[in-house]
Image (cartoon, rainbow, N blue to C red):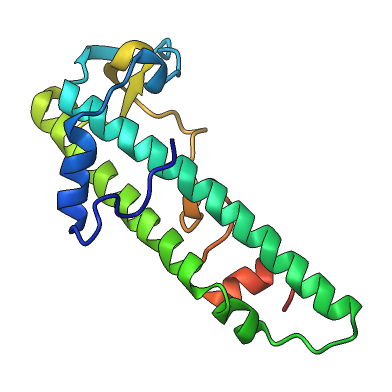
Length: 181
């Protein structure tokens, strides 16, 4: 089930989120599938409210990844067609023709980040012991735990929209990643 940026026509982000959370059905299969780390200290189970946030967030992420990858392919195809036809490439025109999709992907990214922040802060309130821990995780069975990071572990590079490897907000960055400039 794809999650739209706004599922309730004319509703604010918060109204739409509340509507999505209201009658959401989910199972453990919708939850995290990461096995507990050997060095993780478990503190409890995620609340039903946070489970719902997790599910909405992962659905938004999946929709955003799918849309970002499709847009990247479409723009690359259009650029390749223009080059093959010997036409000049007006990158601003190509990107402008996809502005609605770019805006939708950016909205999904903001929704994802907002829900992510609310969920993790809620977990910190639910389990204050994790509030100051270096790494908090949610594991299979909705288990919440924490662990110390090792020196080998580095955080993921920022700026990747839904892990797709493209940054939609700046057309030049997309063009560079597509090898167009």
